[in-house]
Length: 173
Image (cartoon, rainbow, N blue to C red):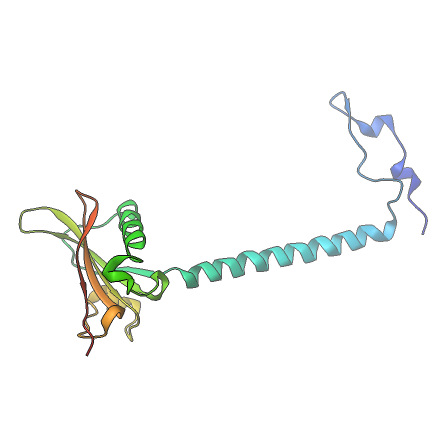
Protein backbone atom coordinates (compact mmCIF):
# COMPACT_ATOMS: atom_id res chain seq x y z
CA UNK A 1 0.00 0.00 0.00
CA UNK A 2 1.20 3.49 -0.82
CA UNK A 3 0.44 6.45 1.40
CA UNK A 4 -1.62 9.33 0.05
CA UNK A 5 1.14 11.92 -0.10
CA UNK A 6 -1.13 14.55 -1.61
CA UNK A 7 -3.34 14.58 1.50
CA UNK A 8 -0.42 14.38 3.89
CA UNK A 9 1.47 17.30 2.35
CA UNK A 10 1.17 20.87 3.58
CA UNK A 11 -1.06 23.07 1.44
CA UNK A 12 -1.21 26.66 2.82
CA UNK A 13 -4.48 27.44 1.02
CA UNK A 14 -6.34 24.40 2.43
CA UNK A 15 -4.79 24.68 5.88
CA UNK A 16 -5.64 28.35 6.48
CA UNK A 17 -8.87 28.76 8.47
CA UNK A 18 -9.79 32.18 9.89
CA UNK A 19 -6.19 33.32 9.59
CA UNK A 20 -4.91 30.33 11.59
CA UNK A 21 -3.20 27.30 10.13
CA UNK A 22 -4.98 24.11 11.21
CA UNK A 23 -3.37 20.72 11.66
CA UNK A 24 -3.92 18.29 8.82
CA UNK A 25 -6.26 15.42 9.59
CA UNK A 26 -4.20 12.85 7.68
CA UNK A 27 -0.69 11.76 8.51
CA UNK A 28 1.99 10.42 6.19
CA UNK A 29 1.00 6.90 7.28
CA UNK A 30 -2.63 7.19 6.21
CA UNK A 31 -3.66 4.64 3.59
CA UNK A 32 -6.76 4.48 1.39
CA UNK A 33 -7.97 1.21 2.87
CA UNK A 34 -7.81 2.49 6.45
CA UNK A 35 -10.60 5.00 5.70
CA UNK A 36 -12.97 2.10 5.09
CA UNK A 37 -11.65 0.27 8.16
CA UNK A 38 -12.04 3.38 10.26
CA UNK A 39 -15.63 3.79 9.12
CA UNK A 40 -16.36 0.15 9.98
CA UNK A 41 -14.66 0.47 13.35
CA UNK A 42 -16.59 3.64 14.13
CA UNK A 43 -19.86 1.93 13.19
CA UNK A 44 -19.00 -1.05 15.40
CA UNK A 45 -17.99 1.26 18.25
CA UNK A 46 -21.27 3.14 17.93
CA UNK A 47 -23.21 -0.13 18.01
CA UNK A 48 -21.32 -1.33 21.11
CA UNK A 49 -21.85 2.02 22.81
CA UNK A 50 -25.61 1.87 22.15
CA UNK A 51 -25.74 -1.69 23.48
CA UNK A 52 -23.81 -0.68 26.59
CA UNK A 53 -26.13 2.23 27.32
CA UNK A 54 -29.22 0.08 26.71
CA UNK A 55 -27.98 -2.70 28.97
CA UNK A 56 -27.04 -0.21 31.72
CA UNK A 57 -30.55 1.25 31.51
CA UNK A 58 -32.02 -2.22 31.75
CA UNK A 59 -29.85 -3.06 34.76
CA UNK A 60 -30.85 0.20 36.44
CA UNK A 61 -34.52 -0.45 35.76
CA UNK A 62 -34.28 -3.94 37.23
CA UNK A 63 -32.37 -2.78 40.30
CA UNK A 64 -34.75 0.04 41.21
CA UNK A 65 -37.93 -0.71 43.13
CA UNK A 66 -41.28 0.19 41.65
CA UNK A 67 -43.23 3.09 43.19
CA UNK A 68 -46.98 3.28 42.43
CA UNK A 69 -49.28 6.09 43.57
CA UNK A 70 -52.64 4.75 44.72
CA UNK A 71 -55.64 6.74 43.50
CA UNK A 72 -57.98 8.56 45.86
CA UNK A 73 -55.47 10.31 48.11
CA UNK A 74 -56.26 13.55 49.92
CA UNK A 75 -53.52 15.31 47.94
CA UNK A 76 -51.10 14.54 45.10
CA UNK A 77 -47.45 13.95 45.85
CA UNK A 78 -44.97 15.79 43.63
CA UNK A 79 -41.79 14.08 42.37
CA UNK A 80 -39.53 16.13 44.68
CA UNK A 81 -41.42 15.02 47.79
CA UNK A 82 -41.48 11.44 46.55
CA UNK A 83 -37.69 11.50 46.21
CA UNK A 84 -37.48 12.77 49.83
CA UNK A 85 -39.65 9.85 50.96
CA UNK A 86 -37.54 7.39 48.97
CA UNK A 87 -34.29 8.77 50.41
CA UNK A 88 -35.61 8.66 53.98
CA UNK A 89 -36.86 5.11 53.54
CA UNK A 90 -33.75 3.88 51.74
CA UNK A 91 -31.46 5.27 54.45
CA UNK A 92 -33.61 3.84 57.26
CA UNK A 93 -34.46 0.45 55.76
CA UNK A 94 -31.15 -1.37 56.50
CA UNK A 95 -31.37 -0.65 60.26
CA UNK A 96 -35.15 -0.66 60.72
CA UNK A 97 -36.82 -3.58 62.46
CA UNK A 98 -33.53 -4.79 63.88
CA UNK A 99 -31.96 -4.97 60.42
CA UNK A 100 -34.23 -7.85 59.44
CA UNK A 101 -36.01 -6.16 56.54
CA UNK A 102 -35.17 -7.29 53.03
CA UNK A 103 -33.03 -5.46 50.49
CA UNK A 104 -34.36 -2.21 49.03
CA UNK A 105 -34.75 -3.47 45.45
CA UNK A 106 -36.88 -6.48 46.44
CA UNK A 107 -39.86 -4.31 47.38
CA UNK A 108 -42.64 -2.71 45.38
CA UNK A 109 -44.01 0.43 47.02
CA UNK A 110 -47.51 1.87 46.95
CA UNK A 111 -47.96 5.40 48.27
CA UNK A 112 -50.67 7.97 48.81
CA UNK A 113 -50.94 11.49 50.22
CA UNK A 114 -53.14 11.55 53.36
CA UNK A 115 -54.16 14.06 56.02
CA UNK A 116 -54.16 13.18 59.72
CA UNK A 117 -57.00 13.93 62.15
CA UNK A 118 -55.12 17.06 63.28
CA UNK A 119 -54.72 18.25 59.67
CA UNK A 120 -51.07 17.30 59.16
CA UNK A 121 -50.03 15.95 55.78
CA UNK A 122 -48.24 12.61 55.52
CA UNK A 123 -47.36 10.05 52.88
CA UNK A 124 -48.62 6.54 53.56
CA UNK A 125 -46.30 3.88 52.11
CA UNK A 126 -47.19 0.20 51.70
CA UNK A 127 -44.31 -2.12 50.76
CA UNK A 128 -44.43 -5.72 49.59
CA UNK A 129 -42.17 -8.24 47.87
CA UNK A 130 -44.39 -9.62 45.17
CA UNK A 131 -47.91 -9.37 43.89
CA UNK A 132 -50.03 -11.02 41.24
CA UNK A 133 -51.67 -7.65 40.53
CA UNK A 134 -50.66 -5.49 37.58
CA UNK A 135 -49.81 -1.77 37.87
CA UNK A 136 -53.37 -0.62 37.08
CA UNK A 137 -54.80 -2.82 39.83
CA UNK A 138 -52.16 -1.58 42.28
CA UNK A 139 -53.12 2.04 41.46
CA UNK A 140 -56.75 1.26 42.26
CA UNK A 141 -56.41 -0.80 45.44
CA UNK A 142 -53.97 -1.40 48.27
CA UNK A 143 -52.11 -4.69 48.43
CA UNK A 144 -52.97 -6.15 51.84
CA UNK A 145 -51.52 -9.38 53.14
CA UNK A 146 -51.82 -10.82 56.62
CA UNK A 147 -48.66 -12.53 57.82
CA UNK A 148 -45.76 -12.79 55.37
CA UNK A 149 -43.18 -11.35 57.76
CA UNK A 150 -40.62 -8.84 56.57
CA UNK A 151 -41.88 -9.11 53.00
CA UNK A 152 -44.72 -6.73 53.92
CA UNK A 153 -44.61 -3.48 55.85
CA UNK A 154 -46.29 -0.08 56.11
CA UNK A 155 -44.87 3.25 57.19
CA UNK A 156 -45.84 6.92 57.24
CA UNK A 157 -43.65 9.87 56.22
CA UNK A 158 -44.47 13.13 58.01
CA UNK A 159 -44.13 15.96 55.48
CA UNK A 160 -43.60 18.66 58.14
CA UNK A 161 -40.92 16.90 60.24
CA UNK A 162 -39.49 14.95 57.27
CA UNK A 163 -39.36 11.78 59.36
CA UNK A 164 -40.69 8.26 59.09
CA UNK A 165 -43.14 7.07 61.72
CA UNK A 166 -45.39 4.11 62.56
CA UNK A 167 -43.40 1.32 60.89
CA UNK A 168 -45.58 -1.79 60.95
CA UNK A 169 -44.11 -5.08 59.75
CA UNK A 170 -46.36 -8.10 59.17
CA UNK A 171 -46.06 -11.06 61.48
CA UNK A 172 -45.07 -14.60 60.54
CA UNK A 173 -47.67 -17.38 60.49
